Picture (cartoon, rainbow, N blue to C red):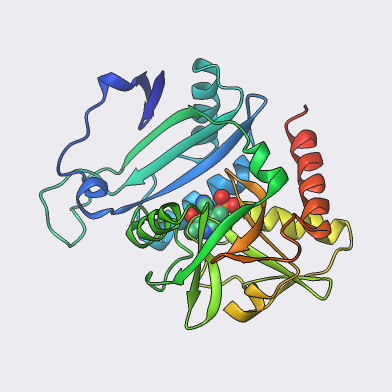
Length: 282
Ligand code: PMP
C-alpha cells in the first residue's frame, strides 16, 4: 500500500530511511496510533493534539498544520481502502551527522505514516486476558509518546513469555499503567486509575472513558493505588486504542474477581461500543 513521507504519498517501497535519521539512531522522535473504524479516523483531533504536544515537549518543530496532517491521513486511508485497522505515524528530528545535541535549524523533521488492517480483539474482549506485574523501569516523562520504548518492549516480551497479554507497571509499589495501555481497577463499586502525571501516558481511550463515565454518572476517580489493591480488586481492565476496553481476569496467575469480566467493565465496553458507532456513523 501507500505511505506518507512528509507531505508526499508514495509506494512504501519507494522510501528509504537514512541510517543517520535521529529516529533510527537515537529514538529521537514521537509517534501516534489512531484506530480506523468504518474507514474513519477515531478520535483524530485528540490524537493529533497529543502528537503535537509530544513533539513540543521534546522541542521538535512541526512544519505542517494539524489540518493538513488530518487531510493527508484521510487521503492515505482512502487510497489504501482501509476500513478496520490503524494508522501509525511518527515524526523524527530528521537526518544529520550523529551528535547528541540537536542538529542545526536547516535539518527538517521526518514524518512517516502507514496504514495497517487490524481486527477488533473480540474474543479476548469477551473472555478477558491475563497480565503480569513488573517494575516500571522507564524514565520520568512517560507523558511523552516517545519512540524510546525499550522498557515497554522488555516488559511486553516478558508478558508474552508467560502467556500473558499485557505487563502492568508499578513504580515503588504504585501501579502506573500497562506497557501499552492504561490500567483501571474496580474496588467497592468505584473505578480507580492512576492520576494524570509524568508517570503515565494520558491515553486517548482513558480520556474517552472519563467522558463516558461523567455522561453516565459512573464513579471514576484518579487516585494512586498499589499492587495489593490491584491483586485484590473486584475487576481490572485496561484501555488502549488497539484493545479498547479489555478485561483483565488473571494477574501473576491469581484470578481477579470470579475470573470473568465484571459488570463495570462490561458496562463500559458497551458504552464505548456505542460511542464508536456514533463517531464512526456505523
Ligand atoms: N500507555 C502507554 C504506555 C501506551 O503505549 C498506550 C498506547 N498508546 C496507552 C497508555 C494508551 O493510550 P491510547 O488510549 O491513547 O492508545
